[in-house]
Length: 94
Image 1 (cartoon, rainbow, N blue to C red):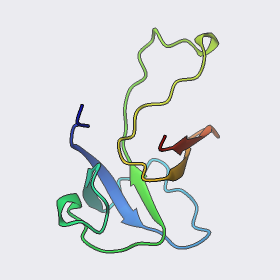
Image 2 (image 1 turned 30 degrees about the horizontal axis):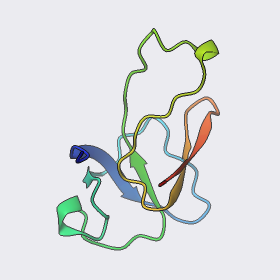
Image 3 (image 1 turned 120 degrees about the vertical axis):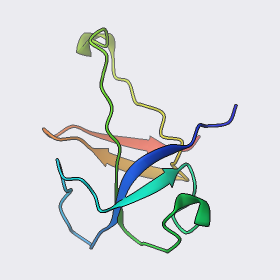
């Protein structure tokens, strides 16, 4: 099954830069395409970057029912994520 194309926010980052929580990022990126690809809309290489996509967790997803990760569709090998308030996750392509 093909992953649907999604639009996210994107900006290049410097080493050690803190996550831009709550801020709209300057560019739009189409995922799951590689950043360097014309299909992504970015068409350049970035060693470090911020990608932002927002979603609403349904009320029925209670914390005591276990952890859930949204499918990213854009993780080539591995990636880490950080959430406002201190949450974090590791995503790997398997």
